[in-house]
Image 1 (cartoon, rainbow, N blue to C red):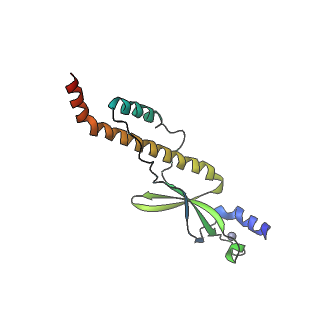
Image 2: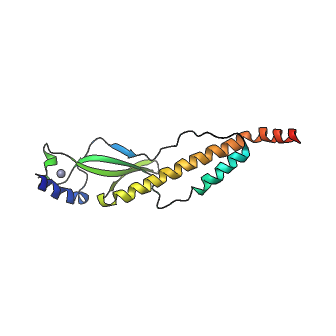
Image 3: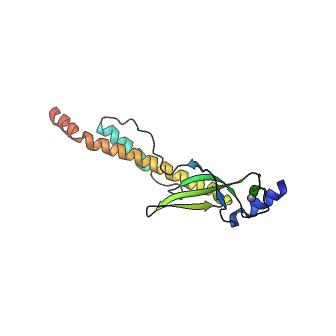
Length: 153
Ligand SMILES: [Zn+2]
């Protein structure tokens, strides 16, 4: 039985999805970082901004999607997965294109690479989120900061 399922495993990438079972999302495309501690002094805020801006360069391809694992049946009727045997583990990407959710199958031999691209997207998104919070803090604190400086002179 092990040899038979191993054979089916190899053919997996050429087979259409026969059945999709509950999806487990392993890398979310919409993950935001936690709310950060923003200092009150503009000089400190700008210093933090400078360091975040340096982190904004991608270290490789960026893939703005969610990576999920699915358990599916293959297209080979003789395979154990069509009876009571275990289903095959596969991965797919979900993303929105023109407001519609698209699902794209990830070939097994591309999985590590694709995972790193999604991880890179999450990192950039988290950095962008921090930059946004710092930039907002500068906007919000600007009037108070100007008054403080005028009061000092
Ligand atoms: Zn199968």
